[in-house]
Length: 183
Image 1 (cartoon, rainbow, N blue to C red):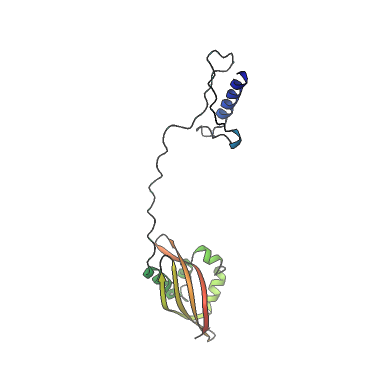
Image 2: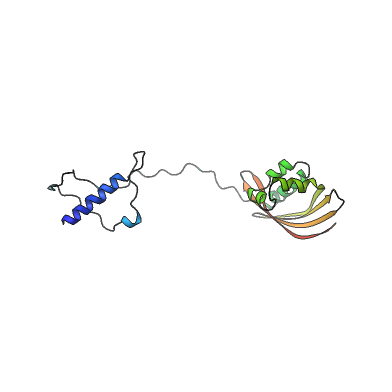
């Protein structure tokens, strides 16, 4: 019985010391300190020199619901997906700054490599156009992209894209050239 009282006192002492620095509630015990039974309260006839202690418990105030979150954006329609790809290529090769902003961070770091490489590629292009642009919800587009390069080459590529939503904008997240041929 004495051992049980000492154990209960030690647990209560450790829990009362394990508070956050802002004076909040006690931190939960580590997984190694959990027990399946509650310690019995110290009887009032205890000869302990410290006052009786109670085991710290979680606050009884229910946690308020999270702040109102914006509803999940509706999935993009095929037409929105198609427009995002057409609008991206319509900016190029002249407005590379705006084009760069229409690429996801992942695309910027992987496919485009970096801004310098992206700019170097688009500086080599005189004209670009899209044809047969087909969107497929929730996030896919396939398009034929024709490039006219400054050195006179003309290339036509069938490319598949995956887009992601960023606020109201749809960004190109991945692209895969399915076929490429001289145009």
